[in-house]
Image (cartoon, rainbow, N blue to C red; front, side, top):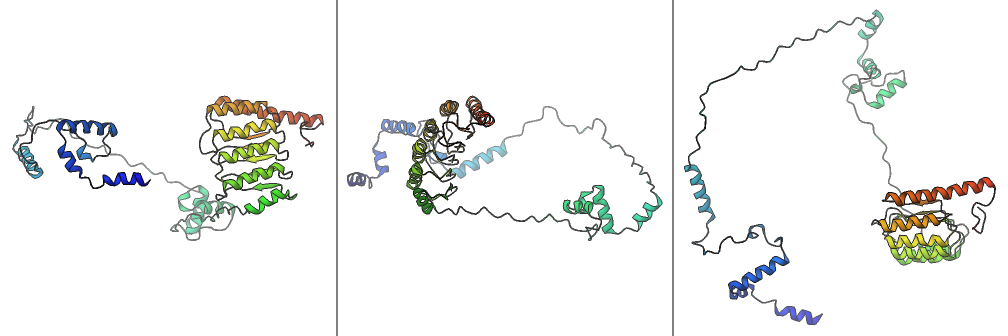
Length: 357
């Protein structure tokens, strides 16, 4: 590193302008061609310097922008306007447009029954507002006041027709509380094979180190109690997926595994699915919403493995291709159908399992 720094220090005090002045015209042209190869769009140059020279003639004088603008303005003022092909004579043609007079519609007098006329004549603004709500004139009342007026016999909008309609105040919904699981303590309980620990939920805990997640997978190899393990949104990656795949080959107790919303690639997901060939107790696995799509090749391999599996009942993944999607859904449907048939026959639902479910 020190040798490279010494080499760079030699060029720190070099004057670039002096070097460019010493170059010949051919050398400058070669330098310009090399720079075009490095930056063909001239993105590193300012906009005013990206245009190439259109001529090689020597300039006749210094460039003065103000004099050029003054000359262009003077030339534009002195240039005569183009004469019209057909001169304008001022003659008016056609008829002026006059709008038609519309006849105001005749409003028919609506006669009501004497009882209704008397009731409306003596009704207050609040009562008229309730009547308008019942008739469906929602601009006078809010939706909540409208439905309250329909449900009750008392006056709801007591301010009358001039009342200000306010929106309904909704109760604020509090944010979901963070996961309160103690990662280290739960790991020790998994290692001790705690009989009360049936479910391990580490969802949305962002600061779990990768070695700790791998330690969970190693501890679950010997655990015979935990049935559900979930690590949604824990920033897990391929090493964690490989460790879980090795765990699934040995574990015979786990029934549900959820690794959604993580950074597992197609290789890690494929290792998890391939481990199902040696596992007959897992009933549910969820792998959806990873950081990058798995691809058509991985989805086809997943579908072929699911078709050979006869114990998995729920598979949480949305296939992007129609072919693997149909094959996967048919495989899950067949497995659930087998469970139903075995239940009707009265035999064990999973004959390959150590315990009858």
